[in-house]
View: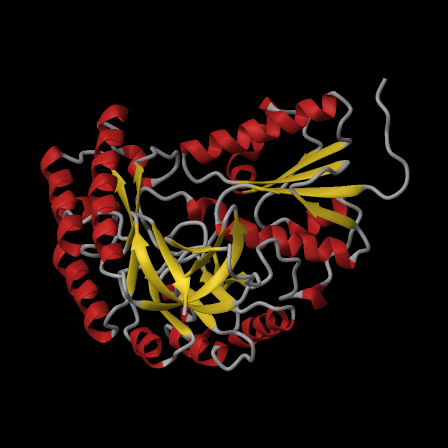
Length: 433
């Protein structure tokens, strides 16, 4: 016989997918706490809210499996209610309601007030910019816009997130100030497209203007840029990165491919020549900048020659950081009308080849750091090491610096100066100076 708990129900928020979902979960948690609700992140709770991802096949599969797992827990009497929100729910709500009817209610990406109501809470407008962060206290994501207006053929994000909508600079500065008061030292700026920021509300690309205001926030020491779009990149941003010490010499710019024919089919608005000219501009204006990118292998029609062109280009460009993914054939995207004609095993082989090249590049670049000194932000203690990052590394996706913990005690969120003594493909080992 099922037993139901009495008293205050604990609400467990489960987050899947990208950093933008993390941010949305934090906003939801902030609203719930302000309503006097007891809320936890990925811990035990009588009520469960799953914030799903619906971007590509693997993410969709993980989201569906998580929903099924919690529905089973509900059947077993371990939880009382299961709610589903986020991108998968936005994109496939009718199908989900039909296939997994035991979920109490489904909500889309723009249904926060309705979700709160279902949880017995009210949406509080005065809380805009406030949230319960789930990351370590010393760094936080700052989502500067929602949605995307780009027409990329392979991408379903506009279907799930809607059109581009920038958050006003003054709201973001206030949010940054609130985070700084709570101990945040590093802001990681995220959006579907950072470079489009401001066009809708200021009638110009205003990322540089935003950065100039954020660097004034006391307590913030690093500002990092994620998910910039190559077409129409505002070059004044490079001036700010070079001139403002708080803005990390780092940019995440997903380039997806380099073959001009593939880029045209992807509707990326750029070419082989334009992409390389932009990368040259980055390195010319900000010497030593770390560039992170992501690539897609196996896009419809990608020939072995086009793949080899991309592989050779990766070898030439020597990106500091690189991720690579197999193409996912997504319904209702422009590319869904193309024939998904690259076999899965070929897609995976191409990804593996690119990542093998990148692993060697990363090892070589890391060897060049031996004997050099870096400012490092300590993220955590793991085993016999304190683990941190340089300004050239973002949490969870980039290189880490390991410092032996035998002789020193470091505080999480502390900045220290480190000399690199040895290096592997994705780890640096160093000593305090």
